[in-house]
Length: 266
Image (cartoon, rainbow, N blue to C red; front, side, top):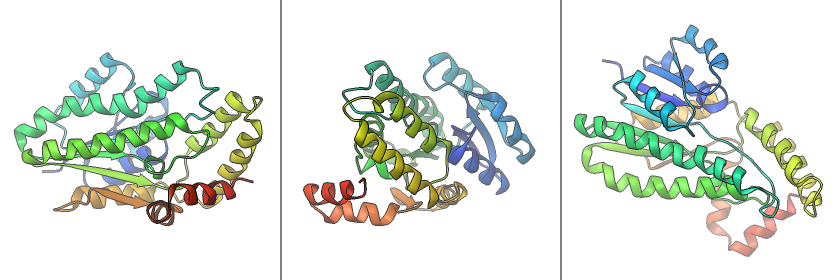
């Protein structure tokens, strides 16, 4: 019997690639996102579209009700909103935390009872290299991903007794509309403030990173590897510059890492 997967954020990027890739490999896949018009193309791959706004309780409940039994939850819905801490309105910060953290947590709450009953389940949380490395102008994005990493570590040790695995995916540079949207958002928020010089440097850095980004199917394959492993790793790393960046973060002191990081933003 094929496993049933719910992939959030399936309208673009990693979520879309994952929904298609898993459907092509025999999984029964539900692809969920706010933009239903952008989900329609998934039907040709056998993916069933579902409307989902992870910031709205009624939408989350309706999504879970439609899917029924879920064996694997892939939390890929996310927002990369940027700007200096001093400039970002807290309303925007709260929205980012709702999407990247609280929406994830609520979905997990709702699928856990059925997973416990079956004594089987895979919860895949899409974090980022940005869940271990904090870039300037991305305070709320990184705060949400650092928090997701902590949530995943705690959850893993809560639910392993029920046969449920929690897997964190840490992508590096991956082709996605999020990078361009995030850079544009950063310039809207901080492009004309005292942080405009740093914002301009980062905008150029993001543009350079995009040139080396991998296709999102690379991350989709990593997710498949994790959910099919008998004893999955707690974390899977992939994408441009992901492994060397995380290795340097582990080896260097905070100040040395800061110096290396900021030297790339001139």
